[in-house]
Image (cartoon, rainbow, N blue to C red; front, side):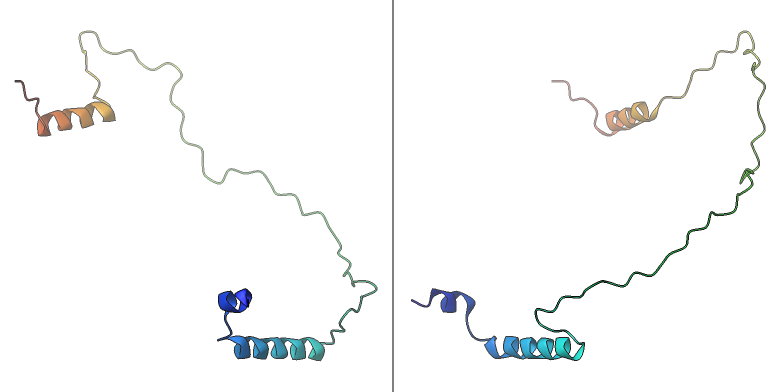
Length: 102
């Protein structure tokens, strides 16, 4: 019982028909023949030549190198390493939210 007509509707039928007619006219104006087959598609020949060699040179000057054996720490000087990121975050959270002991 016209289920397709209920689903699809006919309110845009005239607009769709106009699109179809314009498309068919454009195809015919471009030389399209319905069912026509092109014998061969023209292919433009391509010539490939090798690229010239590029001199290998650094883009940036190399950084100065440190000596292979760093000097040992002075005796008696013990420095505590700074805490890492997680330790700093945990310390801030502990300061912001102290423990509530019952």
